[in-house]
Image 1: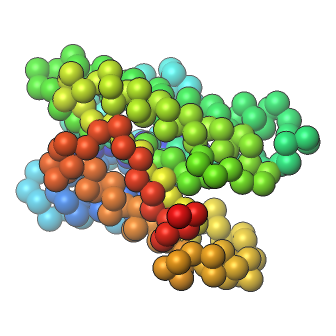
Image 2: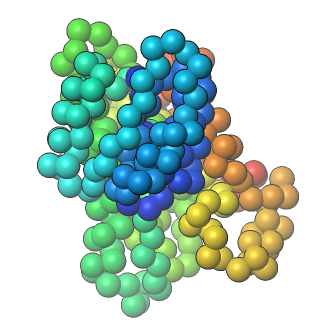
Length: 250
């Protein structure tokens, strides 16, 4: 059973989160789709594969930036599946862009609450549930960003939050290895999602021209890496950060 645990925008109901849910279901996982918007989560739920006998998907809502919401979420998951999640994909992400000299404290805090505190709360909750179960083993996959490595104009808060995700993941990998829990980070570059729909096409074309592979990424490109990290094919990989950028910033 896997849990895709996005935050407020985008969530399991769209973009990378939806693609990850779909890919994991294709691999035979039972998926809990989490989104602040339950209608979007249900739309994703309806698109999931059910080709493997016993697959059982569910759509739930939660605010991953609030500990009480995450606690309630884990209780719902445990109740529904009668087991802890063995795979968790944290794709929480919001932006509140502004140049550093004009960036408000509220905008800084809100981005870190979703983008960094959210993965912390989900990682902690999932790890606790696995550690308390009779069977060890699991894979926690956090969605970071290439911006964490290179920075970006107007995104001091976002870059800081995603850099924090990498630090969190590497530390969790060290601490949770004794429970057989692997923790890794995926760093997308420019990915075409609902978040990019508002960007003018000429700007998107300029971004594509900067990428050695000549195109923006697709959510499925990120989902493919998440599926690999969720599987036994990556059983000796933990604490790693994998760029999914088409060669950008090499």
